[in-house]
Length: 389
Image (cartoon, rainbow, N blue to C red; front, side, top):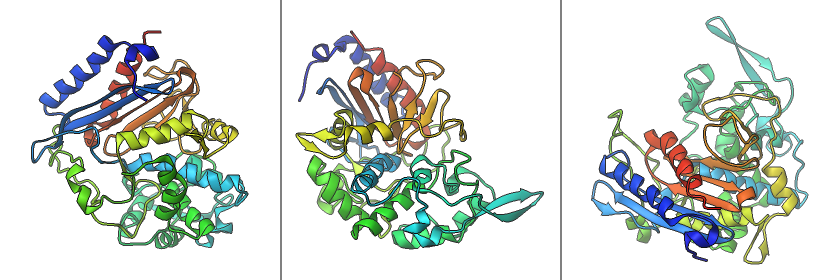
């Protein structure tokens, strides 16, 4: 339901700053375009598009443009897994090897001078480890060490593989850390996607469509963009405006064999807003219950405690739950927010957060990988500065 900003405690004049800033950024050539949506108290108070959808063709951005959301796939897949958990299909502390034997008896790569030694992991990888990124797995682009190079050599990211083939390949590689000892952003949610396939007997895409996307009315969210919708696909600059390096986004015009639970979906602002509204409404949307309130509380609580790691992603003042970063303190972080706020973003620049204390969620979709950190912070600052009550 649409609303004026004032009806939901926001200021129209202050929100106008957001539009002014984003249009100026487009004019400066730092970002091709963007779509921003803000909702509070169950109503959308701001929904605007800026700039160009395809900078190569000078096509204007539209509110219904389709974006590669990369790691904003993770919260959706985490919710899907927890739907199966609610059905009693697994326990969070169970080893993933119970369901995916390829990942049993892992080894950890320990650096010994210029060599690495493979030592048995102190314990098995649990399903909770996968959901909170303490599995010991990594991403090939998160470093240049021996394990990262193994991921690259195995082409662990290739779209021609199946989800099962990726898990089999991961099972042949050492872990970067002992499970449960360090937060390391990783292909853990890809593994969760394969777990969903094994437990449900369906492909990940089919399960998401049946249990989440169709019931929520997320009609443009999928692992590829159908041919008749290609004209709506948002694109990045061919070269990064700051570094000059070539920008290559994942190809989503054809269905992939690999349905990446960690980063494969495309979506629109209106679609993803439905998902966020369900989360904010404690697991319900339009009278349909997807998860219980207590499950949402579990997912959006901190699951790290004293576990630390990857300070470029796990920012000061935040912990991590099951699929989301979670704000732990009113201060410490360099952006405004409330204790209990949870969020995540995607490699190409998409971002969202949910603030239950303020009954608010907001999302901004862009395709500008090199500028993603800047715009995530800028967007959050400008939204919170528009509060009128």
